[in-house]
Amino acid sequence: MSTERNNLQKRYLEAFIKGYTKRTKTSKQLMQTYRPVLADPRASEAFDPVLKEICYPIVSKRSLGSRIWDVDENEYIDLMMGFGVNLFGHNPLFIKKALQEQLEKGIQIGPQSELVGEVAELICELTGMERVAFSNTGTEAVMTAIRLARTATGRNKIVMFSGSYHGHFDGTLAKAQIEDGNPSAVPIAPGVISKFVEDILVLEYGNPQSLEVIKSHAKELAAVLVEPVQSRRPNLQPKEFLQELRQLTEASGITLIFDEMITGFRIHPGGAQAWFGIKADIATYGKIVGGGMPIGIIAGKAFYIDAIDGGMWNYGDASSPQAKKTFFAGTFCKHPLAMAAAKAVLQHLKNHGFTLQEPLNQRTSQFVKTLNAFFAENEIPIEMANFGSVFAPASSETSTLLRTSPSSIGTALLVYHLIDRGILLYLNGSGFLSTAHTDEDIDYLIQAVKDSVNELQAGGLLPSSSAQLAKR
Ligand SMILES: Cc1ncc(COP(=O)(O)O)c(C=O)c1O
Image 1 (cartoon, rainbow, N blue to C red):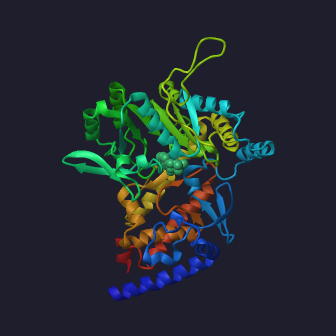
Image 2: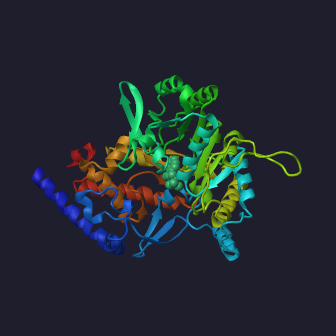
């Protein structure tokens, strides 16, 4: 029986891989041609010997709205959406126009961008923060937020939570370790030296015991860095924990940093701060607000952000920058194209208010609910969750399953089947809906999941449900 099953799986897999590689042959060819010169972690991500022949990213050629076309002219409904960048779909006219106008004017780097003041003002208005500074990526924004917190508090230690992602600055590439009952951190990858993370504590997110640990280290802590809802675990939305964290950090002079790279402008115009009714000291943003251009934003109370430039002063009197300054720089910060796109995005968000996010959040919840009902009915060990328009497997175990376990080849294959059906999805993580996705797109997605599951069950690569077995 098991040999019979293995043969069935083998035949099914061979046929699927043959069809998949034929359909996306140019993507595969390009990856192979340039692998000798192009080092790209995404090209070998989720490598699995069984699926080796289909382990390559789809190479895109163009995009519009909810769609992407690959180099073989296959059309996809995109769910990667720029890892959370494209809230309004691809290439929306209002951003395209702003970029075209700026291109006509040139890309002047060095003198101040004429739009930067207005962009800063709009960010303050939407997020409720007092001052902002601009970087080029989210990683830089988080790195700077940490530096500002250390400057303002004169303390070194930072608390982070397991399951969160804060970019690729060495100082946040840490994972939890308990030594003699004390929490500490070790680097997550070779090349990150332990000195970089020796002042980091990685605690469990949402666990009240973590608050006790913070209390016991309160005097040494410069900041608590939190991804209010982790994009890889959107089911964990610990509002009470966050409220208590706010009270505790405020009482102890610890900087509360919200990393709103994903939640910012997506869950609500005011991000997770507005959604949970919690005011952070510093919040970092990026992705959506750059409208497709690289951007990072460090926004916060003047007390912290003043360390960038020394703070407020006026002409015509004796005032001067008074705040203690730290180091901050970047050739491309306030890039004219990023500023033009950001202004267009922020004005669009301001004009629409929560009426832009609210229906999208609801549609995503409904989408996830429908999928979960189908998975439960078919006894498929996947459960999805969403926070607004971000969705992902509900537990980190499921996302690990999707990622690496050889026994979960069927679940990994589900993603490849969806790609084969014209749905672009990131193998390793979250998906995003945008305002450009139509109800028809969502119906198609749901049907594609159902059809893929049925096919994989017939191929012996996903377990059949008890109802299906009873019929045989
Ligand atoms: C919560 C969070 N913080 C920081 C980052 C890093 O941003 P970037 O990739 O722009 O450096 C990301 C990126 O996905 C993120 O999700």
